[in-house]
Image (cartoon, rainbow, N blue to C red; front, side):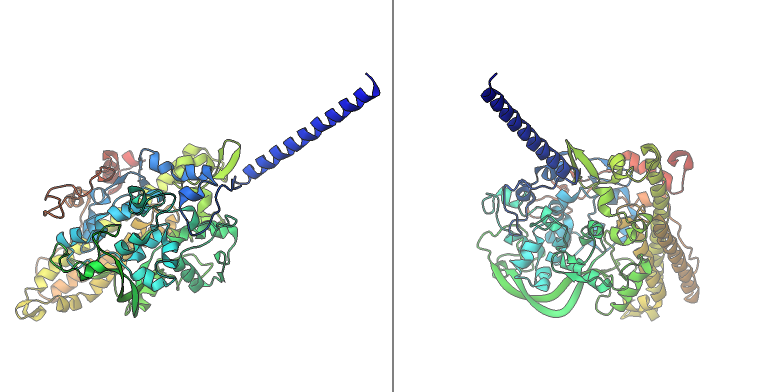
Length: 605
């Protein structure tokens, strides 16, 4: 080979070597990026808050979109104390129909199906159906406010900034069914089409990427004003980009706290102008009870109905956290103190139908309970367990099919715990069984108290000193029972807290059991005071109740059915047209519950 040939060969070899090095470097870089979370955007679309839909954002992050929508396609599965099979909780736990008597949850409460379904189920529930509730014992129900949408719709920030023009109180104070009509049609969907009404970017879209991620760099952020305000009241500093100043580890919990918390609708004491509907001026449009319709319980504008401006009493979504300071573990007494200080402005969520006690309804307080548990104390975030790192091919990604850690113990638990998966699963089950036993004890004690209050109210109502114009005077009777009704309120706050919290106490079993012990004690104190009141007023042969599992099962309401002909439905028709929601729980769960209270170790253990 001549010198020129050698030179060409050397040049060719060098080019091949350089190309190989460049390819290897690119491959290593890609795998390095994958290993730190696989969050490199494909940059197919430009992300922003004008289109918050997960289908749109998912064009840049297809792996995450696939994980997020897994629950849409998978068969539902019930676990001992959770899962995503949306059976009726009222059938499994009939005591709830008594505990929530007079409140819409007593007619419809189902196991949750997951983040994808939250808006679908919120729009389907009987609790959001004015005609149905008015016709089935809830004559005073006037329709859910948009405040309910904060935790159910990924469109919330867009609606706040566009429909409500940034007015937080106006947003919360509008009617739910009015606000939902203003969700824009995106991603090629036609206005008022099935796609526009659906869960994929439409009006029934639930949680989405934009709720937790900044579109510019995918860093975590808070998008819900209620949480930001509550955190500031606890001692956090505001931050324009994140919502509050917090570390990334903290943010991996705080983004979940936008919804997994106790909340209430705080009256502002002022009037506010907000969006309404012209149907209110159409005298031909009536509700089932004959009163004038103020909104159309439908998700789109139709039949000439148009948006108008109206003036209503202002409310805002608020978290009762000002007594819970930054860095402190939560204690249930902090709620007692908060609601007592604000009692004049917010006396109750509802008045109990049977006892007439001013009640508080606790909602999914996972953030509060978790804060005092061993995992929080060791810096473990919500995402560490519920969104653990997994492998998708060569990529290391956070699992965006948000679910129980028990679904994947290896990924969720064994990064810290060295024991076997079987051992860890048994530990969780033991904790949950113990707390569930305490919870059933507290609930049965409360139902016993409620039944006893009902008996004493009836007896007192026969006495002239507790009557007005010859009829029982509820106010006079309630004054006589004031201490008992306060014990009912506080006892139920504790039982309801643990029942509404979605870990069956696992997030902090010591605090959960402490609350439930208090609940049982308060209920028994209430019964003791009833004995004293009975003796004081000459009521003879009064004996306190002690209801158990078999007594409670007699309260089973069954699936929801229409009791009257209503809006094209016949009396006897099933309320839910599909079978995915409000069915019977698996028989095994009922058998487990039977053996939990009293505790049958031969079966449970």
